[in-house]
Length: 386
Image 1 (cartoon, one colour):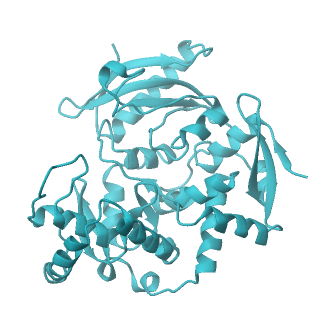
Image 2 (cartoon, one colour; image 1 turned 60 degrees about the vertical axis):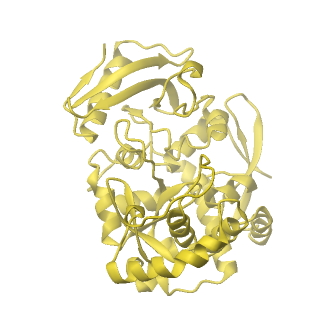
Image 3 (cartoon, one colour; image 1 turned 90 degrees about the horizontal axis):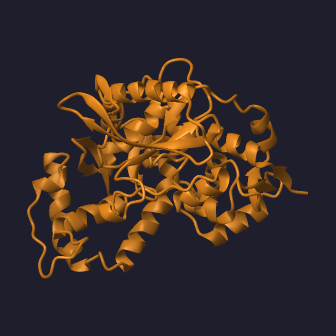
């Protein structure tokens, strides 16, 4: 018999799993937050605060912008690599990432972005320079794209740096104003993690279990795609081999449909321990793991959302960079805001209440308090809401 979860329980379970229901207590522990989520996506857009900073701040109000950069530079607790996008991951996960390096290397070698001639011509020279000079960025090399420039064209040196980074030969040493600096992996990753050899079977087992832990409830496809370091056939075999630890679950969507999925054997205990809904309202980043999967977001909460930064202005339904607003276990609105760092002001450009949600004085007061907290994350002093 499958365990049945109604929509209310599923909402609270998903938010609790993502650290958005519990009230932070104790000192800030960024590494523990990253381990709980599995990864933190990096993004270059600094609309108010870059996505990775915003995501961590949403879990603990004492987080401030330089902390993640300092942790990455320390080369001890976290490393940067590619999940579905550039992300920060816990360092103790590094031995399980070997198959990801291999898969990305093979994917690049099959793709139109890869030019074997560039690797042959540039690889040794790039590695020698980095070994001799230390961490370097793409700006420290000079090569030009030949032929017709396309949208994703890369000069040869950048193609080869990325190829070596994706395949695990190079690692991110640190970032300066979001520019990545590459170094040899052995100079970035502690030997205890770099030299640990884990069998393929152990890697698949760990990756599947860790993904399902962070999904709380998930389909085979969702387990596969969480880190995309395994095939759907491997996930299916893992479920078959772990029938005592993986149980079938049926959960109710916001629209009343029922979806078949899986959960780990401790799911009922996790549900019993879910924190109560917080009274505080939260402004959520578009790249937050709780909302990143837009299809899952709409299924659980009935909240339709799209980030429209790449949509032409005339075709946008909402705005350039619009944040979902979370209250308790519901998304109650969305807001477009942008930082003016010179004026040290957070400017609210637009606000939309969700259909059927009444915005009285109490909700407005909560949102104003959250906007002021959000402003402080980016070292802004005031909020301008015309």
